[in-house]
Length: 320
Ligand code: PMV
Image 1 (tube, rainbow, N blue to C red):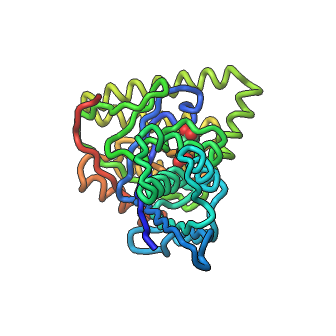
Image 2: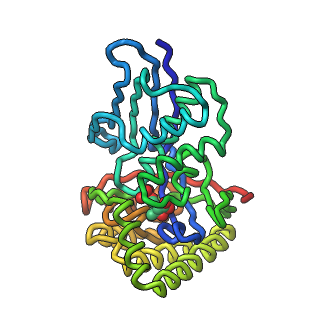
């Protein structure tokens, strides 16, 4: 039987996580090193309707050894939405396989990467020629279920090559005035984005002033960082990154482990470091300049904590 594939990748958030759920701007980076591939096949045989989700065994590049049997509820919702949108009857005779290098529950956009890879594979298999907006909308069906209330930053960034600024609900490409590298370090602890988003929703319902203050401060950091980034002032971007970690720590989103990773990255000479994504575990991002700088920060993190790390390069580029 004919099979089709679709790809997406992970992402890390530099500025604005959680505040973006309340309309504040956020800046995210694609992590093309962390690929996710969906393979979809029509089948009438004994495998009909069977879905498999596979995460590769631990390897030298820090892949994840977690195997999940069956397809998640979010992806089932996505399949339903695809069927509705296209009028095609898909689910009874599909075999779906996901091979993901995006570790789940680490704030790296694994659910959005799975969803986007699957939509692309379905689009290729059924020749539906979905446009970018339709793909985004379908990924968001899955994301709303995965996060509780999803801003769309993950759904966007898992399909883009350049950094993404989400502002007023619109994606833009921010100007980058200097090349840089970001080291992503995994705390090894799962953090549930849904739980973190729910925790803040409850806290803000009790204290609306806290929400206003948080959104205001996060917006201030993101806007200032965008100016610094456009001007190529990386040390200033780094300082704001560290300030942002403190802001998120004040909301109870960091853990001893993510606090320690951020501190070690700073001690090793990173320009700034913060937790990234949903929090309550997950990853830390550290800002560095050259490859050599990134390597020395990454080595310090691994040597001192055993954390696995990934490094991504961002090249200078115009905004639009
Ligand atoms: O933890 P992740 O990778 O799913 O990122 C979530 C980002 C949040 O701002 C916490 C939620 C959202 O939908 O924007």
